Image 1 (tube, one colour):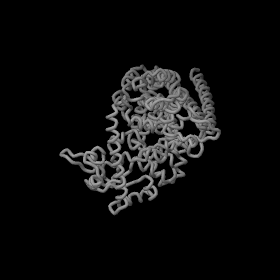
Image 2 (tube, one colour):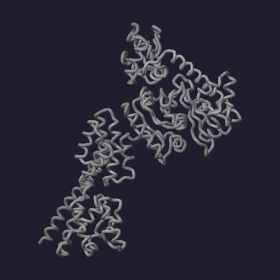
Image 3 (cartoon, helix red, strand yellow):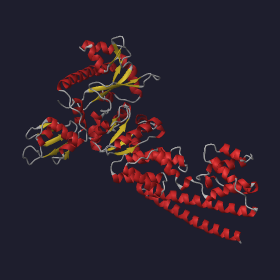
Length: 607
């Protein structure tokens, strides 16, 4: 019995040989490699070298060398299976069940055969791209600004629009029909035989760390062609979600830069690479997997997600963020203007502008918050609950408790969540309790802002009961006086009906507030109120209520500015923080003056 070879291969890719060797030896960076005095023999001058690019170590003194598994076997004096267990534990990869040796040998042979056929196919497609039949593909690449050097670097090819040209070529090279069908290069027919999977497509090979083509992606050259991209199925040599496009070329630069830029598509990587942005990997058009994240983590603990800016790209970026955070990696997000992808943006604006914007990439929590509040009104309890619910999973996914709390505070400030609500939400996150939609909605409902105040109810009751008073008070109301209130829809409907000189009744107001299920109940109660005995008393009460609404509006803005000041302080934006602090001070002075004047007016009216 033994571990599956696919697991061993994946573990070798995921294990960071530098990090593991550093558990035993003090390494120092020297060029592309890391050096130390050899742990296997005594020496004064460092001759022990670790190459992260090749995933091997070698001592120029005692000639010991090999993979990360060989190193652990030597250091721990253990067998190969035990070395696998140690490396898996250090890498954080769970061990699979053991498999029978005979099954492994059969699987390994099949995998080697698939890779051999892939190599033949790739060479043939490269030749086709250079021939007359590849003219349209070459013109497409030229129009996209792809150079000959880049075509060679990424080994791009062209699959002619033929049902069996590749099959015939591979059979002539010595492949059997059974091998063809297992390779994923052909599609098996129900009635027997097969046809070429990739036809009339520009071909992008997926190359593993050993430089072997394990899978392919093909882009149609037809404007209306579907699917736009066609990818290899899973084979004995290729499992979806365990590889990253371009990593074989970019891993050294990722390690040197200290972070990786994660993009979605083939050209989203190829174009930046051509322009000198070399610390890029692509997720092969599928949702990012934990295995792919572990691959990136071997070379850097920071990732900038740069997916397309359209709705689908934003959703894919959010899913990627959660997956990356689960591996305790710092995440930032770069959203390019006009929903541009990296390919289009660099060709239009240049690599310098791309790098400038990349340097200003948002922390993941700010990106999530921006998406959560888009097209939502945080003064609406339903919208606020939805925004909180959408944001909290990205706080919960952070593994560091200190960072989790920091991101939580940032989110709560931005979403204007009150202190008592914050306390309950944080306790739920810490304890692992539910923060689903129903829980958050119930919490927001308990907020004072979600319930009508005495002042707004009284003002509505007064103007509903007296048409003359309504004609005086409604023109004095501004949208900002009631926009954030629980009764906003009733005020809005009342003002609109009055401006249109329409009848104001229970039925007309109910019809205008159908979106608010509580409006009818509240309207019925308000319209049952008895009016004041004198008009002057009603006017005095209405003035007092309106003053209270003005004061509430000032209080809300002051509270919002306190959150904005906290945000600016966290971001290190001293200029914005100081400007907001001065504005808050001015608002506080206005509030004091307003309160003083309102009290003076009340005294005059009482006399």
